[in-house]
Length: 500
Image 1 (tube, one colour):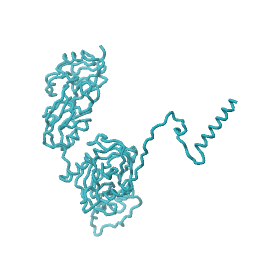
Image 2 (tube, helix red, strand yellow; image 1 turned 180 degrees about the horizontal axis):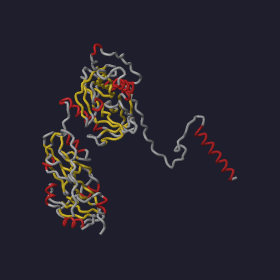
Image 3 (cartoon, helix red, strand yellow; image 1 turned 45 degrees about the vertical axis):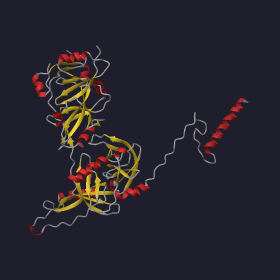
């Protein structure tokens, strides 16, 4: 009886479940509806996917196609019938424009006169842009117009204009163009500081020369530091060659960025694209409009990130700021008293979260004006006034000559000696110790003979005796920060002393 009941129960369960899942209504019930879930969960409000059609209708007319050309010389001496120059040009045209190009019938010049070289305008590249004023100012990427002899802007209504390049800034990849027109459609400028990760955005442009193409996605990250001069907006909007210079637009119809780069292994879209924040682009555009170039400031330092170990060793509450590894001799920072090993925490009151924040803040400061740098030095903050000068060209840090070897291994694995007077004068330092040999943790961290140690945690190193006393007192359970100078560059190195 019991066996039959079990069999009947099994049969009922299967049939009932089958009816529930695949009944005449064809309704599939979720596990919670069948009572299979341990407990009911609160329903998450449904998020309706957006319809972009009205948005595209509103902003699309202000997005333009940008076509660039260059002038190539054809014919002339050495370019006779079937000559190498002619063959190379035809191959160029076939590869970039497809199909065989008609070749004008060549004839030998009459009367022995040499043929005059002819210039032919050929297409160089295709990109995108957008109008920001009714009188015809257009923003795009600097790389879109770089090297072009002529730039043509085409609107969605097929009107074409020859554009004048007002200026281009390679560091931010922003270009400002001007076309002659009135009452032109224009985009509304948004605020890239107010964007949120996860919000919907669209891109409009001319990928692969397919004009007026719309793609959509979300903002993936803000202030993505790619090593360039400014942080970029990361999105998953499909961006391909030809989209460069086009707008990234939010759901309010405001442009929040200029599509500029893609992260790719194939040369096409791989799910990650980057846009120049519109706030920075507009600042650059205003300078280009006024002077045709962008003026930036500099203070003459080489900087690096502050690691967690270094921050803890120096008594900093968190690993923020920019560590000064080198000060340019005679530069603004040198004159202001900034030293290698200083941690720059603020510039004109603005917090330095990452080292890359400093060049952007300095670059935007008033040239030849007074600014204030807040540094962390020997366990305390102090404000240092500095005069910002104009950045005329990119300056790379000068690499010094490797220090010669000189001649009691301590808990850090270091054998040190006093720095000779001549060496101090050469390096322009007052104290420190010279590394004669490095072993153990010091060698593993990359220290080598010839390095000069200037500071241990927040204490300035005076001589070898004092340094070894300081090392002997270190807690082997804690990491210490050693300021090491090699050539002209100083860098904090985190070391944990060996147990006694």
